[in-house]
Length: 394
View 1 (cartoon, helix red, strand yellow):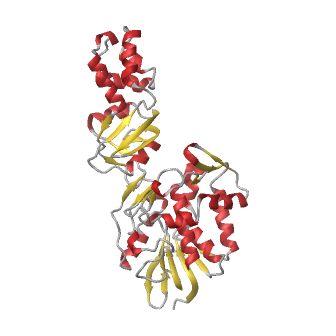
View 2 (tube, rainbow, N blue to C red):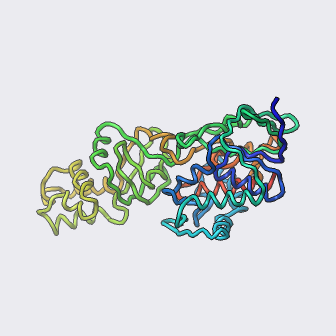
View 3 (cartoon, helix red, strand yellow):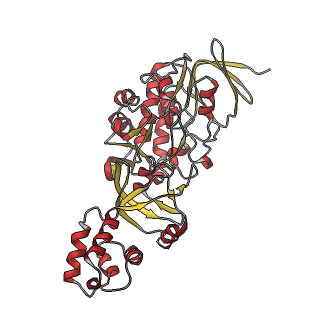
């Protein structure tokens, strides 16, 4: 017979959100058990930011999160800010630096962040069990969590197993499935912060440029991002594309400004006068990487000198440079997505405690909730903030 083990709180998922919830509850004197099916904690933390963990952003704000209810994230983010997490990083003497756009990274390794979280869990006497396959969760007076070997009982249960992105890291829909079991609705779920794919002639064009990167502005609808873009053997990637992918939907166009700092029309018409004998590819090579200049020129003009191109032709080329309209065929899916868009419907949760409105004691945090941040440390801050909110409530 399986032995019943009793705790105040069971947290399932030893990633960023789960660790924060566990250490917060543990340091409040709760008896906490943290379970994970993986054999190590913080797997996604360890690979984030190229192994240096982009652990938060100086520019955290609610408008940098996507949700069916854009107000839901405000309470948690205000209660535990980026400055609160930075203070924790400083307390553990972890050296860090700011990269572009407010992104903060460890000087050394992401392992320092995991070690910090584990040290804080230890300070709260959190019990951690890894390699645990959960076979059942039920609720009567208390929650009952069954693994292959044991049964755990607790008044509070925190689900923090994340979303579907990067399945090779062990990502599953476990929390979504449990939410449904307890009657909580889900919003539409899809990959976010993901490379976009193309087909046909445009894919052939992009494959020729695979590996080439440049700074652009990518737009879809009313949203735009100015960052780097990279051509790949399947289409487009890089920060600008990942950002806009979270706003793009199948069948929509994205619009790329390849020369965000240049008035392309004035530039081309001026060069027609000052360098009439030069070919378009040569002129474009002044403002674009050479390979792209040659390929883009080939799309729009024959090998003839600038003097041979009409002003209208040059204006049309300028329009393409500043507003290159592309229709992706799809995305690279969860395998390459950094996050999962959508999740547990926020209408079913308290924004202050992350507790399910109709299931007392059940809290859902992190990526599994319908709150998705931009690229650049925003999703980690949501994990810290939502984890903290739940840890204070149990």
